[in-house]
Length: 213
Image (cartoon, rainbow, N blue to C red; front, side, top):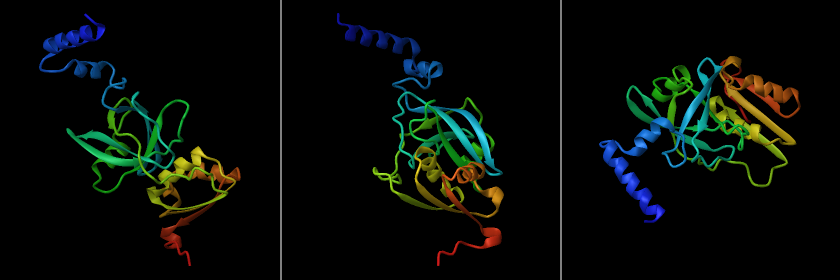
């Protein structure tokens, strides 16, 4: 009997023993991030960014194929016994050395998933993942100059790009109601102090809406 046939027979025996569950259901309990399992991630940390935004640090399973800065990922989260799916931009650089990825989420009124992630998500929680996707990425040839116009949580894919690639000349104009509402504000000001970014903040509560005229 070949090794393939032996494995097939052993698997069928396991199915008989574990019915009505499958052997893979038990493997999920022991090693949920293993290769071959449905793609999952484990939340490893939650860092507050503002009063209503947080960065979620995720350890993807072995099936994760990586991402390009600017892309987003769909995640499945169980909220009150119901699995809900939402898409969030990845804010970590591609090929981060520790293999983890981050999303940064802003809680919105009546947003079940966003409020759950920002206010109640805990390290150790397992979530479902899709592969990263999206076309909002930098061109293959790095541009000599870059201008980013962002507002609110729209800064998230751009932050992934800033963390991933250094530019010779990059300008960012970012809008938020008040200074304390600027996500990544400390890091942005550090980049500006190091001459890696020319930053203009527009605080719409006092400055009004951005006028490009």
